[in-house]
Image 1 (cartoon, rainbow, N blue to C red):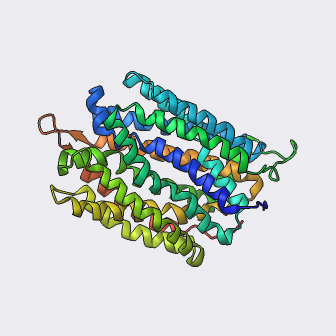
Image 2: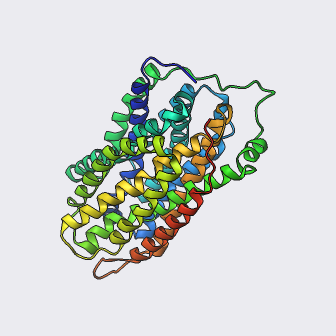
Image 3: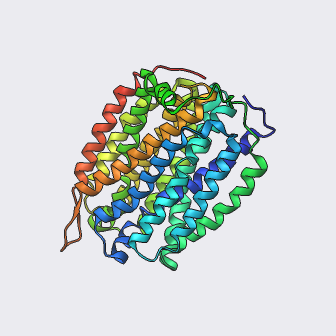
Length: 400
């Protein structure tokens, strides 16, 4: 373990990195209806915009797994994050649909490794018995991006144009580079000599010949895929089926994200106290209710939608805290970056798969503009959630 003067400060900086990283990915989805109208594209084409980022991120995470443990963690995150910020700024200047897909792919190539390195730094800095709280702090970036970042980005898009949120995000994100350089310590205790380094074949065997790690990998992919079956199409569904205005969808992210932000720390504490598998099972079980409610939502009062969307954010989004805490202790530090990067590759592939499946399963009525098939995505998401409950109980606890 490393010793730092202010562990909490480092965790908050990493949370800020995650905030920018997550907001960059999420900002496209609430603008789904806007982008489809501006570019005159179908839901399937929009799903390609979402999937282009995650496919590129999956490829880079997989490739990065074979070099990430050969570098100081600080140097690795600086290189990946700087490239990610440049890609985000390039998205702001995309003049058409095809260029936007290309720029999202470039951003994903660099962004793919950011999350894996962040999780590796947390696991290297924080002992396992306190890691749930640490994960809760850093992963609170997800709801914060939803509650504050996404609505603000949509406000800027509505005030100016859809390019503006990417430009704003790139400029703000650039400032985080200086915080990373100033406060993240050099982290090179995991480095091995050339003779001890794993070959790509050995790295893959390290992950996939261990049944426990393989089950954990499948568990995370089920969680990611099940969650992102719903997210990309939620905004168009609320606008075209439930009767929301584009501005009213902001409240869904503000309320749900805001409540999840406060719940994240609590979920982290529960994870440290009762164990990841127990907390994850409880969250997965309850998550089925808001998933089915949202995907079967008729035209109804906004307050009802906000209640179920808030529950969806808390229980469906919060389940990643105990899940990531569980897998962070499955491999020793010298191979942790490799494992987390391979894990990130699988996660990104799961997100891309969900986006593509969602795009294939839903259609839009050309006359009424209603989104059709969203209910089927809900049933598929619940099926994956139930499968994840059984899988979570089979992952054996390891604390490294």
